Figure (tube, rainbow, N blue to C red):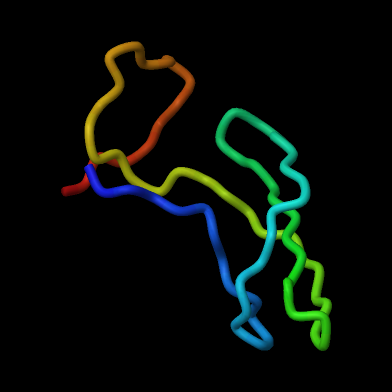
Length: 71
């Protein structure tokens, strides 16, 4: 499996951002706070993370979780 990265770019200046906080809101939703590393920009923003599709089914599925299975 390819190595993944949690990096994201600033939507304004496209500089890499640093994750400074994560908050699990529910089993299916997390918020991530990012800070742009460009001192001339300084944008701080919150992004949402939620599962969108299953690539391999869980070996220990939760009955309450419904994530579409798409290849």
